[in-house]
Image 1 (cartoon, helix red, strand yellow):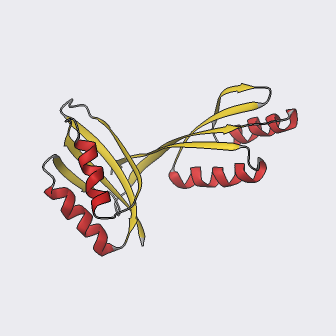
Image 2 (image 1 turned 60 degrees about the horizontal axis):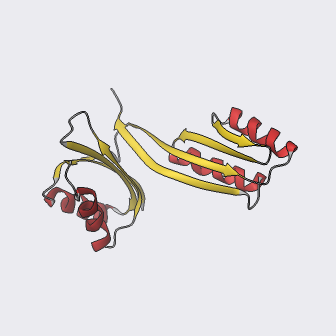
Length: 162
């Protein structure tokens, strides 16, 4: 099993995202992340999909996507250099003054922004790789046991410039 990345260029039509997502659920493929948004061409949307699969399943996924009417292009990002980031929000509740000092210290060290806070609660914004965000969650779960709430937005990716 290997982490895989696919970029899709699809027609920007009503229901396209639902049909693509339905293709995955219909075949019992599990997605790790799916993000979608318009491109510089208003008639085209870009989807970034990450999944964990073996080679055989991944080839089936790509074939199914290439058969979809709304898919213009399928790009396999798995083995090429890419830049990817994921938006994540973390709310930390029930903070003491000491906790709040630690929240600000961790935010500074890990390049997160404190985007809202009051004396007992802080809201952090983080734009990092999935792996880095996973590591941050583990750290914050350890430091603030049962006091964090996490919202992750899914990764976006683009091919690196050679």
